[in-house]
Length: 391
View 1 (cartoon, helix red, strand yellow):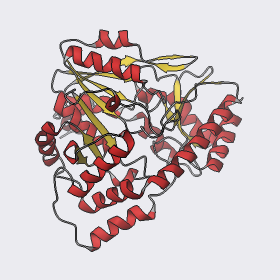
View 2 (cartoon, helix red, strand yellow; view 1 turned 135 degrees about the horizontal axis):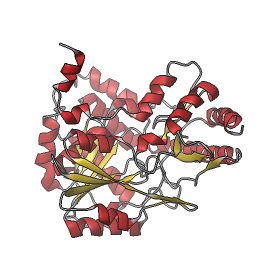
View 3 (cartoon, helix red, strand yellow; view 1 turned 30 degrees about the horizontal axis):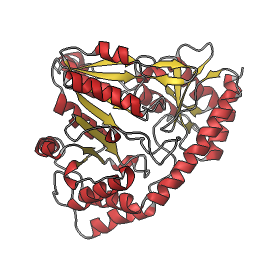
């Protein structure tokens, strides 16, 4: 049977799943020696030893069997304590559900709220995986382009309101944003919450970068600051960023306890739970990881300064320093094809960046640079980029 016939026999939604524009550049760059990899959403530090040792102890103790679908009690209790420290109010372990990555948390939240023929509103530019996951289940992502100006990115609430119709089931909001660094203010959050209440929508709140925040306080503003207990909000998060655990594939959903059985069922019918030794590592991250995270945040603050100053010096780059996350999203004067530019920078500068074309409407003229790395590496990367971009 011809390969084309095999493909034609698949679901249309599976066939239409887009190739990641980020992964395209990564795969191209991995074929070249000496490329500085600033394309992905991760830093250069390995997971710290105290986290790895917790997993090792669990394996040595024989924790290799099926486990709690919602997550081991110790981890759910640790998540509740962690949120209590961060948000200064009480949380119950029954509000937390452990998933096999932040991406699985997103897939479950989308599957809970939307299906064939439904729509999810997504402000863009945004990390592309949520829109792709929406399409795969048969729903339609509705991209609402944000506004970029001299003061940075902002959300046009009239555009958001206009995008809502009887088929709309949810809004997916990433704050702080990957890739722009835009961070919703408390007033922004209240406005989004009011829209969701008015139209009976779910809010899927991706707060992965909540603690990579360059304003006042130890975290960004959150829907948790403005919501009522019964509001239709699903929070998705991951251990990947705060504790250098991208390869461990563990995340969580925070939701009203009444939704627990539904979430447990969806976990059961996808992965049947997260490996217990990985969960033990996650407990260690939550309970002992504050000093490590403080070190990470200090590095990203320095990295933010280095890349902003370096790209400003080229005289060709337009951007506003991000309020949160650890990316700089910037335009290069007279460069309109950022996919081609990203591939060219791999060849000519030996620096890997993500093209803005990967991030939906409004992202096309931009490049994304991850600055969660060693200062010396970033300085080298900026020297290389400046040599090319200053021409």
